[in-house]
Image 1: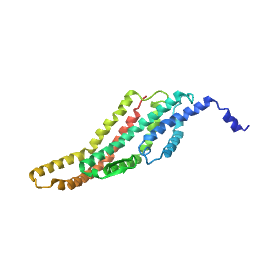
Image 2: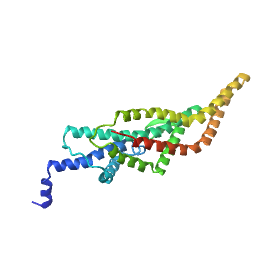
Image 3: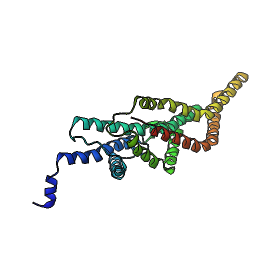
Image 4: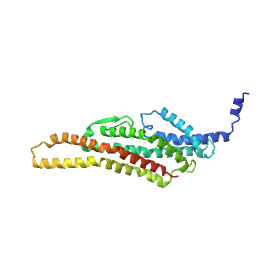
Length: 264
């Protein structure tokens, strides 16, 4: 018998369980993370590419992780732990996805208020129709996310989660799950704050058109107001867009801080 074949045949269940627990559970959390993470979790990245990224990341970060509990490979408890790790990875990346949706919603609000909402296009990453302004904001924040090494920091935060949420010690705590659910409230409030300058400017313009309509009833306010509203909307968008980079950087830091607060 060849030495290599004899070594393979001499593997027992404990050694197999050790290998599975050492790599399979981190891989489950990392795969769930890449499944939802911005840019990598969109339709622009195929499932095969996400799988390769998860495998490569698992091989790199596994030596840095704490010891994993050794449990029988084909047991119900193993399947439960794998499901828990996938859920934790999804919850970590969900915070980043909410951050990106803040700017999509802000772009939609600006487009609807300024009359630019008629210009719609299919978002290739999500497969839905969105305003061109929202798509422009999304492209901007995605490029800014990569330029700020946000994807590397996100992987670092996910790796640190193996210390704050050890494998085999249950799911996320009730307080953490409630904070994740409240991210929707944060998304709406942050989107309104970002779109508030355009909303306020268009409110003043609409009030002015209302006064004009009362003073000069013979004036076709709809024919005059629509192009003026679009032009003023583009001017307001041009003026306020310069501050979106700093706002995104602050929101990104807040998101990473929130992700580090996850506890089991």
